[in-house]
Image (cartoon, rainbow, N blue to C red):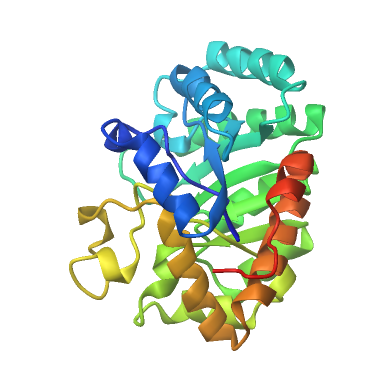
Length: 279
């Protein structure tokens, strides 16, 4: 069985059929779904989703794309909500946080401040982080090292081998999703093949980052198709083929890696862990 370590199942794209989407994921062998928040306004939504659906767990954080207008009051809300969630077994970490230097118009200095302050909250509560690292691998990693955060996932990783090595040495796992299914994504596929198996986790980033078989062409049109957590099973098939290993080996490894990245998965992960007869 599989775990989707990054899925925005609370997004409006799923409002019409959220339950059916989650059921389809389970039918495809996806037994766990990690749902990160993106801003203070959806903290309660991701929490409620996880409490409603036994397949889901959640993280709380402020996404860099939501950084405009986010200030100290939002950080205060985050810290308060994190403290209140520490007794909730379905709360697994701080996320989605990080830096985005791809989207034009975002204030890099403000993003960096907001990211660093959230890392401090993660450090204070000894929680892992779910990281957004678009065009910002070096800067995201530098803040991790500066503030001593050593557990979590660099989501949708698309950096160099050296950047990947530094994240892994810091103690993080690297998330691979729909991008790895494209034959022209050579660097991502090379990383997925050559990195140590213990460094990898699987994800969808649904409703975004649709795999090749849902997209309009062989590269770059992922945004035109709705991705779903069921597709992590297809991502896993591609990953297993690239590495030349069987599905059960990959399932056990990536599940173990997810638990190592997010220890609060705990008993939830144990009860859902891969068994013989994997799909």
